[in-house]
Length: 282
Image (tube, rainbow, N blue to C red; front, top):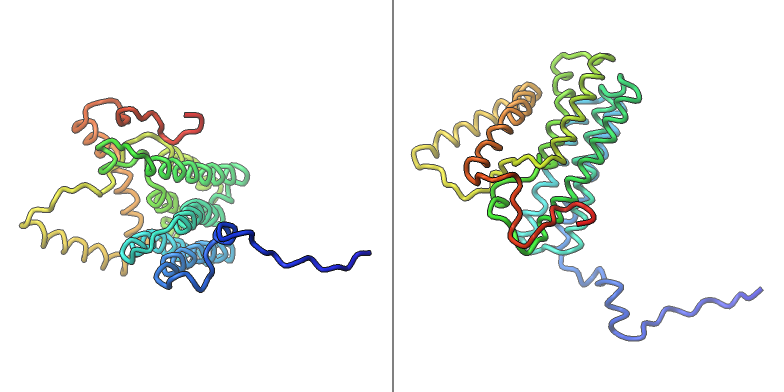
């Protein structure tokens, strides 16, 4: 038997060494901070799943919401620190599917969908798949060189973070007194399928990114409304989350109506020369 050790790897040139990626000591600390936040978001989401299967649902939902918050700020911090990178984009996509798809679905299944047995599990699976499709479509549309003017104001379908907030509505209701049973499980299985459909639909959903400015006389009332909302969220967390989810769902028809009134054509209208909406085969 030949026991000769393998020779050490010797790159043929600088290109071979560069292909292996930068050495750890060559990466500035500011580039690591956004990725660390992304990793913390994944840990929070998966910890929420563990807490749900231990029956600690208040903490489980709180961890999923914390994960969603961290997942939302990592990109902004990266841009603030000028630390955006392709690696960070891939990490963020991984965190998105975990925090907005897998974690909410498993928490919901552990709390109420399990009462519906296989039907509840199928609903949870469909929601996760819909969240993945929604995120993939968003990434494809974001990479377009040519964009329609409505893309700065509207999403195509409900965004994944909002979908995670909406799909947990049954848990919010349970935490204020709605007891789960088989009938409730079947009802909320249908509700989960509805949220999955809204994620992959072509419904125009206002993004809040428009450049419309707040009138000066409304600045203080808006600030006061935000303070009141945060105060009620801290004092009556689950009641406030129920109202928030229902209010968001109620605004969807108004957003679609506003889009049609402003752009006046069949939704969605593609930019000139672009026929790709993120679906395979196009």
